[in-house]
View 1 (cartoon, rainbow, N blue to C red):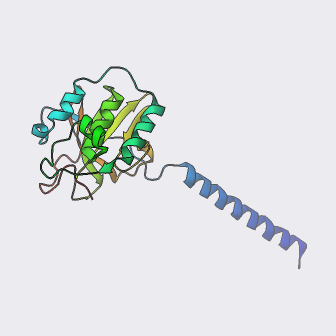
View 2 (cartoon, rainbow, N blue to C red; view 1 turned 30 degrees about the horizontal axis):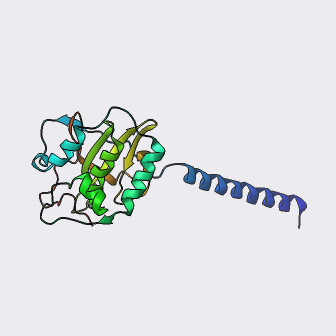
Length: 201
């Protein structure tokens, strides 16, 4: 066989291999389906206002300092280990952080409020939305304006914080959110009437 032809084929194979390796590396390093965090628009009221007394009680006492990020990760992991329990008697009212702590159990509302209480920071928001777009039931989690930027904290589904830039735009879809300083409505604020707040699949 012609030596020049063999050399060309080897060179072409090497180039293709290098291109495949580069493509795979770029897919691993770049976020899949990244999206900017939706911080919503300020609003005076939301449909869940009558049920959020325990949340406002906690938010009214939050401090001005930032918690240590490593400690926050430990709390998220601790909350994730709590048993999941849902109160049919009070499906829309978050149980108190003290009850969640003592029972080591709670639903997404309870775990989120427990975590906010532990963090003791006005930099958190309590979010009501959909864990996945199109879900019939609603979910609750926190977002935190940490020293390095916004993070998603969901002690119900994950044992670590999540970078919003690495979360699909079809996950953690906010509808309403609540900060110590006010309330916010988000792009999907017209939630279906059959949605069940705080009890998810």
